Image (cartoon, helix red, strand yellow):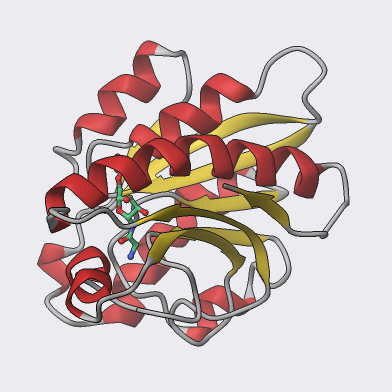
Amino acid sequence: HKRVAILISGGGSNMVSLVDSMTGNHPARPCLVLSNDPQASGLVKAADRGIPTAAVDHRPFAGDRAAFEAELLKPLEQAQPDIVCLAGFMRVLTGDFVSRFQGRMLNIHPSLLPKYKGLNTHARAIEAGDAEHGCSVHEVTAELDDGPILGQARLAIEAGDTAASLAARVLVFEHKLYPAVLRRYASGDRNPVLLS
Ligand code: GAR
């Protein structure tokens, strides 16, 4: 089995969908759930599922990204992951950190990339009057929310949608898309997964 480490910052619903998918004939298994917030409720969900967990609080590093990443790297390297999945991980990683996992780090982002990199994606899609919105899984490169797209799920924006209603609908698609991409990726297939 390929070893998968998952990085989270909060509730970890995407992490749960990934962990729960890695059973049976799946080519991968979870080896670590790591958070930058020791209070992240996702850590409890991972521990309940028997996955090793670790946390490195970013706050004491107050902007010293290199020092934070040096600490983050310790549990991650110990876990010896073949694949690293960012799943609601809300810290920007430096090129130096990313380069250590080049070609084996994935991220899920709540927009149809290359549209709406960064934050507040749902509000921005509504504000722009877009007919469609969705989520993307991509390979992580040094550029934020960039890198080869490995899967997308799209849905229609309805009249009356708010950022919150749209976020909730996109999240349901995220929970389908990320496990589908990980399964394909872990078996060595880089062709994009397209859902709608
Ligand atoms: C998800 O919607 C994910 O796409 C988004 O945060 C949420 C995390 O939810 N990620 C980003 O915005 C990355 N910049 P979760 O903790 O329940 O998986």
